[in-house]
Length: 272
Image (cartoon, rainbow, N blue to C red; front, side):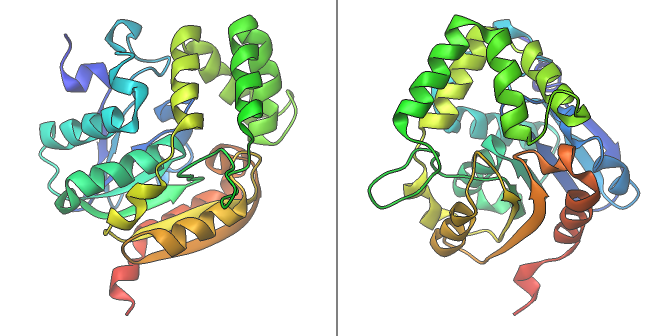
C-alpha cells in the first residue's frame, strides 16, 4: 500500500503560519482549485489532495466498503493532517468534501480553525419536511443511466451540474475529470453522495462554518444553505453568490474566488 502522501497525491504549496487545506467534490480532483491556489500561496501554506476514487488516484486503493459512508473520507482527511503534522487548519471543502470536513471536525475539532463549505448539502433527497432538491426516483434514474452508458451520462450530467453547454471550458474540465474516474467507482461514490443523510451530524459540528453557495445550483437549492446555517452546532455565516452552477470556483472564478479568499481571511469567531 502506498503512503498517505502517495495515495492521495498530497502537495504542499506556499508558506505561512496558517495552513489552508483544499478538498474537492465528486467527479473532480485537486485541479478544481487551480484559480484559488495562486491567490493563497504568498500568505498561506496550502495543502491539496485527491479523494480516493478520483481519476488521479490508483483505483486499486479504492475500498468500496470504506467509502460507502463519508466517515471513510473523514478518516482519510484526518490521516493526512496527522501525516503532515498540521495541528490546526482552515479547511475549504467543496460539495462532498464540505461534509467530509464537518464529520472530521466532529471527530477532531482541535484540528480545524474553521470550515469553509462550498456548495454543501447534508442530504440531496427530499423528505416530507426537508427540500434537498431531488426525489429518490431522480437519483435512481441517474444511477441507471451511469450503469448503462457512463460516457453518455457524463455528456448530459456535466452541463447540468456546472451550468453551461459543452462549449464551456468549465463543463469540459468537469467532463474530463469525470471521464478519468473508473465507471464502477464513480457509480459507487455517486450513490454514497446522493443517498447520505447527515442532518443528524450538524448539531455536533461546533467549529465556525462559512457556507458559500451559488444563487442557482441545480444540485443544491439555496434553502439548503439556510438549513445548514440554522442547524449547525457552532457559529456560521452564509453568503449566496450571484453565480450559477455547483462548481462556481471553476465556472465563475471571477465571482467565486474573491469570495472564497475573503472568507479564508475573515473569522466569524472574532466578530462577536
